[in-house]
Image (cartoon, rainbow, N blue to C red; front, side, top):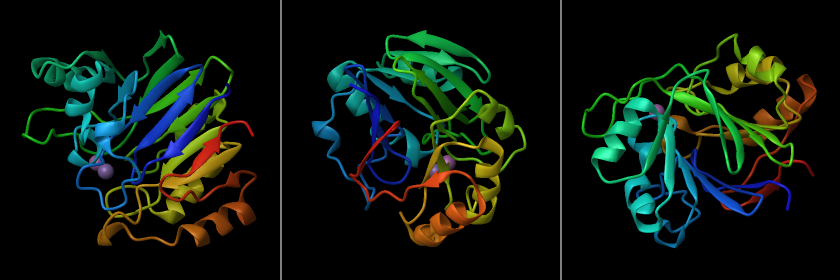
Length: 229
Ligand code: NI
Ligand code: MN
């Protein structure tokens, strides 16, 4: 089965690839836009982009319940292991081959303090190279940076970019990010969850369609997308 992704609201993604289930930034409890019940999810791997509560979310509960391995930066992996969670620590620019394919940790410009104030290292994004050839980039929480062009050089079929502004890129910088990354398709995330990050995603998609060569797709929480339709 080819790789497909479901947006679960905010920055939370559910990815199915080659019979494996991946969960990204599982902020579901307390998320008014959550499209899944954390008690019902049974991922093989969980990805955590940084230490903030709206990304760590239900990671500990879900990982302990189903034995999933959490893939994240080294500092967060140590914090999770101290709490009884199986974790695989990495750092920026490093990649590793897992049963689902290869993942590389990308730069992200943001904070990463953990919910209890512990040092959560530096925030990251994820660039996956799945076994069916699908390449997916999740920028996670970040501002715009020019080296997004280097990520694009490796190929991106589908990019997830924050457009919420205030804490991350807003719509204008996310449009510039699309021009740097040149993904075949792009989905906006990290908006609309609460008042400070309300955005008009449909208008942003119109701008992407008019001013870039990428195909924008605005998902509703719970909606699926095939990476290579
Ligand atoms: Ni954050
Ligand atoms: Mn966030």
